[in-house]
Picture 1 (cartoon, helix red, strand yellow):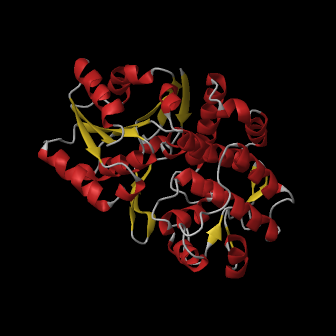
Picture 2: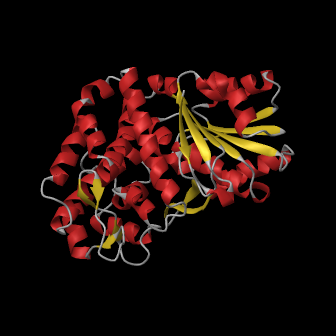
Picture 3: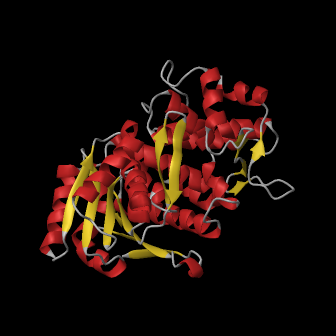
Length: 367
């Protein structure tokens, strides 16, 4: 078992471990008992995973003497709403879950965001554990304590920071992940290489075929290194007041694509398109070394990720501009976290990790 520590400030008692191995779902009762002991566990999942993993996990917990109940909601980003959040809270209240309970988020990024928001707000906050079942959730969204739901104005605009007690990454669940979902997760791995580790980016280039074939050793290497990078960045900036903004590379455009397409485009696919466009923007603004965008584009293509937004499905340029203005990271002007080169993000002379871009420059790369 590989354990990566997220060393958050000691005074808040929020540090936690990310454990990576195969067969961890069978070890879940013991892991929960150690990291997040509770009188009862609310296992929250979606309708796709309810029978595949949810019922099995609840049975394992009950068999180990840990009272648990399964709560499922309809799968899909379009169900990541305030109605879903409030419905889950109401069902837990009806089930008489108290403050001595804990939430287990069993699923991909949508489940993690919704279940985490339930945990952050239920009875003013109860403990929770992340059990990600997608590559994207495993290496990115399960780490850092961001929780929330989407609203008509945009993605993740209502939520809270609430750190999990533990993240359990069982590599075995990736074997049955559909190819497009696996590729979507690789978009975040590419992002991690761009923002923090040129050698890791080179490994993703060199071993693209073996990773795509899901060779166990290569998958473990990707998960471990991405987890290390994400954990290091969020530990240094818990509330996204500074360096953590680099994790938003590709996401300003991506969130706009998701919003205007009504979430028909997978998050990782939107991030891939966003990274290509934002890397191109970085070169046009003179902050990225020449060739940076081409190298990123080539690697995304090798990992079977889209490079252009689908015609007619992701909104007009005007709609995308409006969505970017609404995005939670807009703060008035549209700001971007942009690479200086592979493995290093641009930082202004004032120390800012994001920069403004003119409407003309943005339109030129997204049109």
